[in-house]
Length: 444
Image 1 (spheres, rainbow, N blue to C red):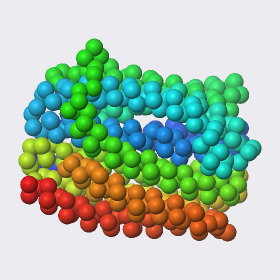
Image 2 (cartoon, helix red, strand yellow):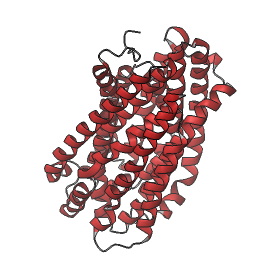
Image 3 (cartoon, one colour):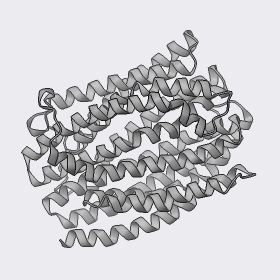
Image 4 (cartoon, rainbow, N blue to C red):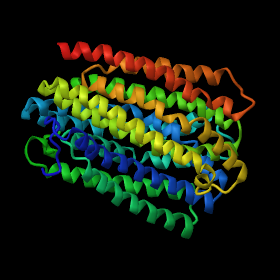
């Protein structure tokens, strides 16, 4: 219980937000570091074609899992809101419903991943010389989808009371196992992309088992009792009302990125490898944004349940400021040392050139995305989940699809300009919607 954070008390709010966000940020960075190590291992010991095979799966994996990861956000909001209302019965029912939903969704994703692996990679114009390795990687990776869902849902439940550290600890343990297995499978057994996929699956299951044990030992209404797991209709409906729009947004967002990936693929395997390496640094920076977006969701949900209006406004302002500063600093640092950073993952000069172009045109402007991420997360915490979803689909996803369709582009940077353009348009629209809806929600 000592790991929980009092989200209702106004004193020390900035310190509490940072304390909440840092383990989530570290979790994302550590997790991406392990994924980056996967890329580095195959890049240095297998070759650029292996990096391309792993990298081309990034948008595909996001497309498959984002719907259910968004639903986990609904669990966070509903449980935090019940906690703010001091409704222990509602908390317990929401926990049991979330656990069952995690299991069902994970098994569904496993089936989907095995079935669509080859067709969806073909639709993305994956080059013939890497599509076999890419398909094998995705099918093995899909075996870990149930574990990924359990880890994400259980972590969302623990975040609702401010416990972000223990999921981080288990992620580190699983990641350490991932590194060890990477070295064993690739260096000593010569397994290539299949080896890093198996290592990732094993680490996902270890992390999922760890956080599940934590939840089964929690005191009070937050405790998970496996025998009581079931889908409670009222809680399921509330979770889906918040989570499905968030998941659809993430899914469509990933779909638009898949279209961009198809454009990247048209420049050849060196472009794919360079882009895959550069994306690692975009994800590092994105975790700063995501951690404060999750902080905004949890803190605003509890304070909304408790009727603390001024706390809600303070949380929004501070999360926005902290995310912009943190993300912008990392954007600049990585871009200044872009060639040195990329050389950690790839050795081909041509691949490094493509990666450097992506860092200049995409990474350097990424802090703009804070505008719609923080505003959208805050709107979901207030019960307005569909509004930011519609805006993001139109302002970001539709624009990106149209941009790629207008190609082909002669220069790599011409394809990538759509990223900052879509962030500016979407950020302006979501911020406007937040100020309108928040006034209405707090008035009522």
